[in-house]
Structure formats: C-alpha cells, structure tokens
Amino acid sequence: MKDKLLIPMFSKKSFFIFFILILHTFHAQRKKADTVYVYEKVIVYDTVYLEKALKIQPAGISIKLPPVWKTEITEMSFFKDEVKGAEVKLSQRFQFGAGIEAGIKKGFWSKGFSEKDSQSGFGAGIWASKPIYKRFSVMLSAHIYHWNSTFDLDANKEDTWLNGFYFSEDRQPLLFQKFNNKHFEYNLQLKLLYDWNNIRPFAGFLVSKNTYKMQFLVPENKVLSKLDDFKSDQINFGFSLGIQYLLLKKFLVSLEYKEYKMKNIRLKNSDFNFDIFKTNNTFAERKINLGISYIISGR
Image 1: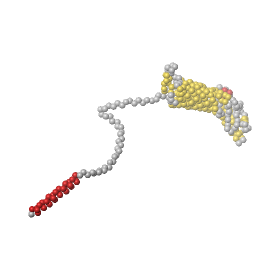
Image 2 (image 1 turned 90 degrees about the vertical axis):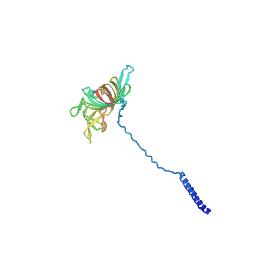
Image 3 (image 1 turned 45 degrees about the horizontal axis):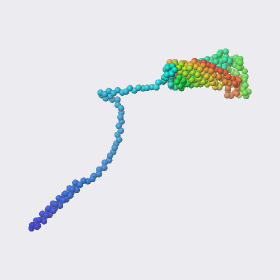
Image 4 (image 1 turned 60 degrees about the vertical axis):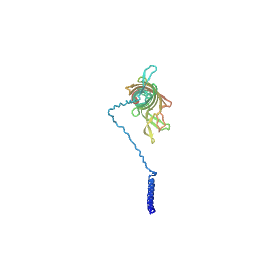
C-alpha cells in the first residue's frame, strides 16, 4: 500500500522536475544573444549654397573702406635735359591728325611760258607721327594739292606757239587744242622732327606726282574728230624743310619749303605713241606752304 502511494508521488515529482528543466532550457534559449544584420541605404544629397552680397550696414558698426585711386597713364612724359636742366614735354603716344595748306609754287610751266613767276594753290592731307628717341619723332604724311592756272593756251581762240599738227610715231595726225598749267599734285612725305618748347623744326624726304594735261584732236575711224587728253605720270623725288609750332595743345601751325626734280617730262596717251617734249629734260619745282592741322588723337 505504501509502495502504491510512493509511485504517484514520484511520478508527480518527476513531472515537475522535467517541467522545470524544459522551462529552464526554453528560458536559456530566449536569453541567447543572436546576431542581427541590419542593412541601411544611405543617400547623400549635395547642397549648393549661393552667396549674394547685400549692402547691409550692421547697426552700431562703422566701416571705413580704403580709398581706391584710379591711376591713368599720362599722355605726356617728362624728362630732364641733362645740358640745361630744364623739363621738356614730349608726347610718347602715336599721334594722328589732318590739316589744310595754302601756298605758292614756281615750276617749269610758270617760269618758262607764263608772265607770272608763281602759281597759287591749296591742299589737304592727313599725317601720323611717333616719337623715336628723346626729342626726336618721325612723321608720315600724305597730301593732295590743287594748283591754279597762271596761263591758258587755246588754239580755238588764239594763235599760240603750240598751234599746228603733230604726228605720232606711226604717222597718225594730232592737232593741238588746249593746255593750261592748272593741275593736281600728290605728295607723300617722311619727316624727322625735333621737339623743343612746342617748336618743331623738321627735314623730310618727298615723293611727288603732278598730273599735267594737254588736249589734242585725234583721229577716230581715220577722221580727225575726237578730243583726247595727254597726261604726265612720272614720279618725282625731292626734299622738304620747315618748322611747326604747337598751338593750344591741339593745333599745329607749319611753314614748309619743298623742292623736287622733274626728270623726263612726258605727256602720254595710251592710244598714241607720241611725246611733244624732247627726252632727257630736267626741271625743278619749288614751293612754300603755310598750313594748319588738328591733332585728332594722341595728345
């Protein structure tokens, strides 16, 4: 009987112990640290900040900005004259200008065939200059002149010393009609100037071309009925001397003497091989001009 009572009690204890073991095992498994891997997607955005200067004066703060000096290269530079110790003002910039001139001229036609010794004229031109060394500068100029006539020859109005028939080398007849010494002249000059207290003496090299014109009656379809021109086209070389004065910083007043040689003067026409003058002739033309020009830029 007693043994029968012990078996159920043992069974109950065994069941309780077994339940405790299972519970302990289960609890132990729950407390076991597991490794958990977490993946995170990281997105990075770039942010651009724009800074804009604002004209804001902080309250109670006084800021004094440093002065900004605007410097400018002066058009005139100064240097000491080692001999006299005086300051000389000379432009170091390229100068450009234009002007007009008037003058008188003694040439081949006025001296040899006219009662008047000289002819008057006027002209206009442009020039450019640049200092090269201390007081010295060079100037390149181009002018065109118109010279008035001092005598006129018209075979239809009077008996002149050129009246009559002439013949070309291929025997074509030419009948003189008109001539006067009114003409255009083209000059190109290179000058060397010396600057001294607004006074500029100079000397230069001159290239000149005069366009004299003589009219003849020439044959057309074998009939002497066409009026045609015979013109001079040679280039002449010479020299010039003169002086300039700077007035009111913008104007140049000049007085100039020019002389050049006219070699082998010929009046030509492309349709006729004819020369009214003898070859190997040489004449000199001399003129004096008074001019004024304006400095457009450079001073």
